[in-house]
Image (tube, rainbow, N blue to C red):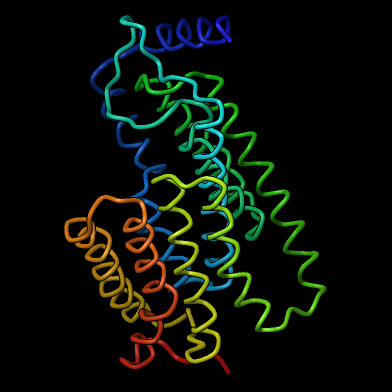
Length: 288
């Protein structure tokens, strides 16, 4: 372990030897593609405006990956880079291995590439995780082994998830079993690892799971539509999402259970209440 940290430290020092104002700004913007705020905007875009089934699966996979990342971080408990030669250009929280930014971007863009198979999508699925991983090293908040591990774990998650979805597609699952699963999975995982980071992921998963069951039963909205309706859906939907995400943070205490409620509310809005509103406001049609 000591050798790995020494190698990781020396690599960051070497990479930062190329620092200049352009690269500082460039990598600070690139790393935003792995931030929570990006997912809060991007995942609803897929669900509301492109393909709700792909969007839900993508969010489901991303949240499971986020939970696993939090679990592994606490399991390995490897400190962040702290050598005085390293410039840490942004803030951070939690342990170092594996990198959530590297793992998360691999999961998001890799899964989309597996669903929308094209050369352009494949290039994006490779370039974005590489750039985000480099940004974490350049900004001094992760070791090389953190981002390599994150990318590898993210790739394994995609393979396992696609296999599981394919296998599940051949089975009939009664609605009652789906409802039980929606409740048992997040609460079961929280029982194994009850932390703030886990509560964010599992609260979102719980809200989205309940919301998608309600949406399938009572709404069944159509994601595609005229461009101006898509823009209105995004403007209204994201405004409420951000209000819930930021507003409840101010109103509710910082206890883990309230974080679970906060993210659950956002997930329920995205998958049920927003689609219901879109249909009622004639911004979306219903599936036939």
